Length: 193
Ligand SMILES: [Zn+2]
Image 1 (cartoon, rainbow, N blue to C red):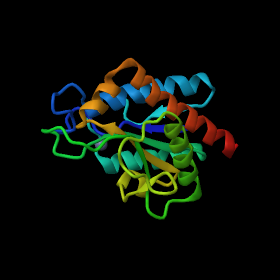
Image 2: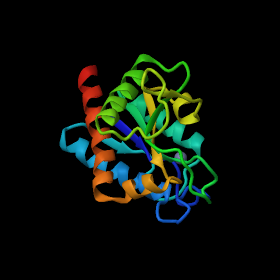
Image 3: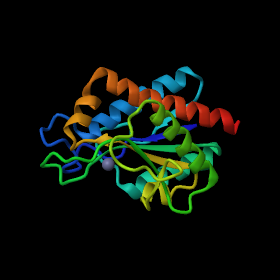
């Protein structure tokens, strides 16, 4: 079971491109649905953690994940975001895709992050920042730290970088971001079975 968290909801302030064309909550919902549809077509069961449009408090999302893990045992979590370098009112320079695990994360989280990184690398979406050596970043995000299953968080390019926003909103760019998740998750799940 892959649990997909769309991150923020429609009532999260900010979290959109300076020109207003890309809203993080809306874009990650589109991504979540497309990724789930493709994986289900490959017989990998998926669940959207927050199917509605509104914000679900972070702690309640963590509790929801842990409840699903208790029920299904072998669940893993993917949290989807778009990144920002500034306050969302100005265009910035940082660009590219990245994946995070919690400090002290287990082997499962690290292998899942690495599988996603390899697919991102193959699609040349890493942008202009220096990725840490293992291919993934560590950050103490609650959704990673307070959940009891393998968990990764992807920052899908920067919504305050003009070129990244153009890429994300193009049909080709959207497909690339979807396919890197589908291939990475499918490969990770195949390795664990
Ligand atoms: Zn976010």
